[in-house]
Length: 608
Image 1 (cartoon, rainbow, N blue to C red):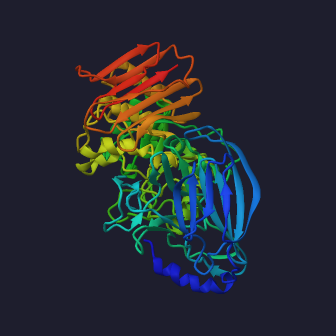
Image 2 (cartoon, one colour):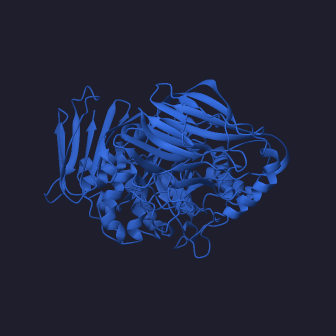
């Protein structure tokens, strides 16, 4: 739980150190390398970020309580980065920024980076001789009433909708990242953060003091600091919708990979038991069904979910792992974090919390041939959770274990620093067909929003593609469901549906899963608008996957500009049909210029 009072009290402990400010600079201007984005002092106070001359974002305040006046603002130089990603929307990332610094006090420095696709800032507290509490941050954004925004109401698992709104006039006062804003017709801003360290907590946005002021409020953090302390980067991705969707700014400002060997990290598609059988992972025969499904569809992985520690009929997890390995399938298995939901929660529990227990468990998993772990039920954004997640990632990597966080905080750049982190839930996904009937009517519009919001910042374990029904029905079409496997980037792509449903689909659909990439060399937004429709193109080597969905309950046609795709003489197209299979599958030799969606429909094209 966020405790505002604890942070306020902590401020008093450091005020003597921080309150050594000088007169503030009144005219500050910083520009991105391409000149499109500017950061400048506002006449009315605060700062304004503009894109192509239009106001994109107003920052009403910076700094910490007692030191929020900028002085000695100066250009440091250019920052250039060229790195590769194992997982994500783009494999080769190149970026450039102009970096500025300013003093907020003798001991506090603002670091500002201007990128071509946004702005990142953080604070450096330095020359601290004694162990002190972390001061209260005062970074705040002004989001004017009337501004279109897609922001999720905060909850510790980041599982809620991103409705289109233009007002903050309601009871909720705490908001999650990422927050998508449309301050002008062709200008979009996505607010988030990156580069959480073990002594940081994650933050969220609060507007409980003024309606239009959204404060950056770090969660509970009882760490004491000395020497130097760096906050996470506060990030605003800025530009047109394509700039937001295609941006890698979250990983651009994250620390580089720390692992000496990454050859063992292999993304892929996963057959997943839980969606159809909530308690199926304690049944060896059900596990066998999903291993056999992975074999039939040529998938590399199977996930054995919760309750495998209570296997029936005298079988054990070792038996299930052995069966998967004998059939050439790599097993992933589930654990409880045992820091969030505990009483009444499934097991196994309390096996990873202590370093010595975690070492023993991970060594055993490596020995029996488990490829990775899914860890569930964390308890929010406080520093304890952040430190625990980093410990899990580091220790798992030593034993060559892939990682998937569920019931966990939003990706904030860890996928670059710890590349064994291949996916994170933090999304209201297909699992919710198990939980509530409201997802049935909301799923299509929600799905058409996620590419512009949650999936921008990192791999998203939505667990897509359900042709059949779980506890509550779906009314999205078959092509819509298939499109989600491309539309939603996740380096471990868990396919939700039951074996008999998947194996009843046309052979072309079954073959599609066995050939589906889960990481991409390039991503382009083709067309779309949040909540209405989405069309994206993703490239792996020399093959393009084009996927689109309709978020509306009515038919819709969209123009396609795919002129960036060349040498396209073999196109396999999946669309909706009213025939008994529900599929229209064609082989084309030219790319279409328009696409017609059925209500809540979809399309997929594989362009070779």
